[in-house]
Length: 153
Image (cartoon, rainbow, N blue to C red):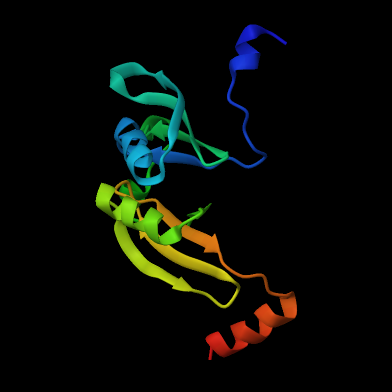
């Protein structure tokens, strides 16, 4: 293995790759909101980021600036996103508070959910949707199904 390969950030099997209107600003937001660590950035023409990698918890997230010429458009340009990035954290309430203080919009306050997580949602300043959760109790699939049936009534 070459030295360059050994320094490449190790990524999990599935890696969110976020297109942002302002990827450098997004990196700073994720540092403040989620304690992200910047692993690398590759600047491109005109100051746009061609590629960046951050680490949140034990997972990598890739980022890139919008590049309409390559079909890379962010949620603000698309006027929404069908994707939610899920983040498991030790303290959902503190993480949501940190994200809101850093500029996120609260979409759903954290609450105890029928599947055993304390769970809430935010939208970051770049239009990406995040669900944030802390696991609080273990339930069997049957218990989750029964509680879900009551929840959805």
